Length: 138
Image (cartoon, rainbow, N blue to C red; front, side, top):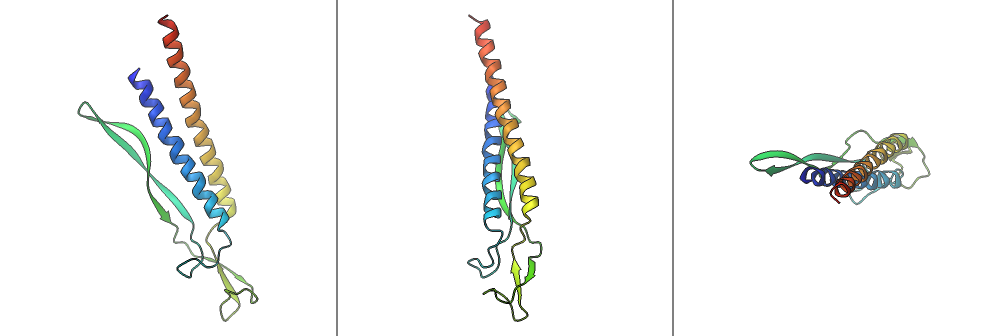
């Protein structure tokens, strides 16, 4: 039974990590046109960095799931468009836009949703196994 609960814990951390990833992707999409942030530059795309969560079980390291280690700011070039009427246009009429590619974000969103669903399925399957094991004992 212990391993079944470990599976559920691992899947639960996966659910949390993918939910966080989805929220970060949503933030990227929402800021895809933000030309000026607190630091005066356009918004930079953010990406979560995951790390395996290890736990010590009877003197050996076992997988305990995944955690968000940090948030990486994508340092790729900003997009530029010619719009001399924009308040943030430079002296040549170009505006620097965030380095957010909506298509890429949508693909990442689909990937995160599928990973979230896989973790939810894993939890439900494990729960069904535990229930069946308990039924056998009756």
